[in-house]
Image (tube, rainbow, N blue to C red; front, top):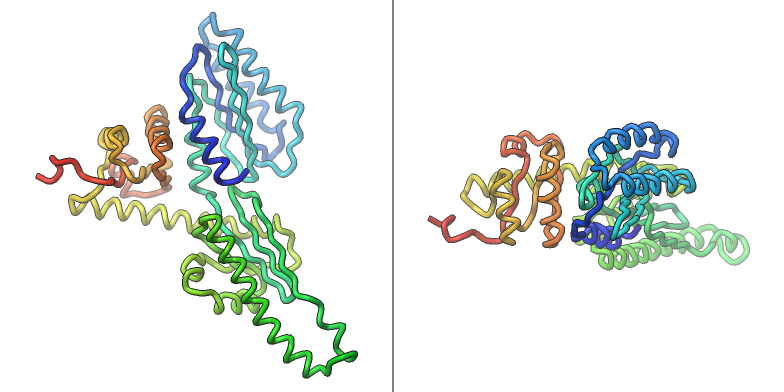
Length: 348
């Protein structure tokens, strides 16, 4: 799924109104296949059913029936995480989302969709561009939530067959170096177009040390500033294995950026600047439209409040940064936000 499509999907889920029936938000890990999560699904279903009023038992049964049917009838190739939203009643609803990265098993019954796991997934795996470089070809991959959403190939024309027939080896070597420089420039031209069109801010180079080093040195500053790492891979590696090799690097970089957001929050708090911390102050800032970025600890345990905070942020188009293992943020209660402006009373 494209980044913008997932964003729009999350926004639509955040905007959904309550109805007279429960909605099931089902997050499942398929790393061991659909059969691997069925025991968890049945156990949660039995537990949730005890809290369903008698008048809604039939709708609940139909809702879960659709979930089971989908898992039984669908084949999942390369899918590691699955999300199912299901509801029966006067306003039926059914939506599934498949991902190439794992999701924790979680099933929530509420009157509206539970979207925080999607928010965390988007922030953790976000999107980036990988350039796979070999001597004769390059492949530019756009990766989002572990899936390749766009792939561009570039190839150099075959020059070797001309050696001995039209050129001396010296002539071939000189021409090869010249063509190599032109090929790198063409890579960079296309890479700039891809990065600009997609609004990408993260770039990873993959290939042999010799190839990545040469391309790295040729990058203009505007691209070099977006380079987060270079990864050594076999030049014959499949695209899927390249994505797996680069995901860990990207997640590490994303965590650094999350911690940087916490440091910015702390600086603003220390200088009585554009920030508030704690559940109550953050909630009020979001309701007033005062917030500019929501910063939320992954360990924040208040489930209902967490959902309210992220839905308010999504509806307002505010960036959400999820952070793991930040002692500073946990001291603030696990949540805070950067502000667009201060209220008059904050100046006094």
